[in-house]
Length: 370
View 1: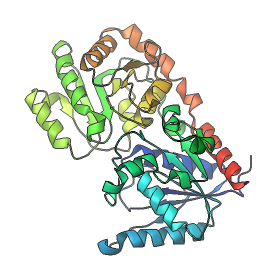
View 2: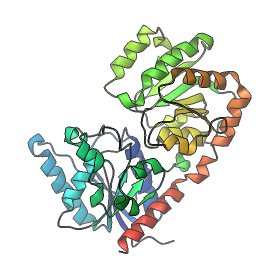
View 3: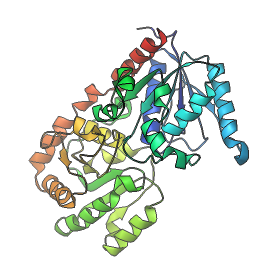
View 4: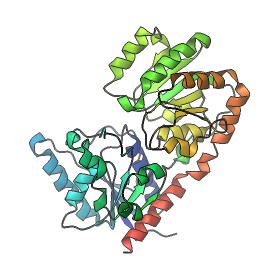
């Protein structure tokens, strides 16, 4: 199908270190590869962990004047919106959506916004500016999404949080898997490694995994734990490892752009989050056939894809004993582990980047036709 007449402008805080940013890089690239004219506004010129198609026109907005930073960003957004001549503008995350909404005043481009997290919890936004505002009740309840022409939710639970008026102009589209960059399922003896990934922040609940691993290691001393990510709690995690005497068995390599390659032959992937939209690293683990353990946390992204004893193991939040039992079951039963691996890769077809991008483009065309 020819999408060459469709002009899309995506807006993101960066191209590094976040699930929303990774989803946007995949969507922008895939829409461009499908023929749409795609532009991408990047708020900060940080190191780029996520690649973007050469067919995407990128605009970077970063003000060196701290006093005029917010004004400069909005002005930069306005210039990008006008220059792109976009039919539809797509911001991710609350603060980015707010900047974009203000910048669009008087320009009047159609806007498709997206809820990327649990709307019932305090927002831990990527940007420091206006962080207090984005954490209060008004922003949690409204988040400026009512000003959108259309809304995309990741899960039914997230959609149900909002009123009927907003729900009527919304749909549910899960995250895409970039299968072109995803290694095939590993076949053979897996390395004795347990992998987890995410921002080192409170909601990811890495301490539960660290404590469970310390107990697990007493029975399986050959295993190592790898925590990929970065954040303000790194020091606390390192101190916890020292206190449990497992420092030599736990590594924290930071954010990496080859996580899938490092994870593909691991013995298991674990997510202990207390709230999550849809974890991209979880989807990648499933798509590569890495035996996966995840918490059944709001807003229901994990339970949409993980079925216990079929393609992974779903456990209750904060249940360290259940996590230990799940890790033990995978480590001690190779046939069970192989079954999970074989079944989980079926997700590759369901969530291929092309299929998910097609769903987004259907929304764009619907919005632009009104």
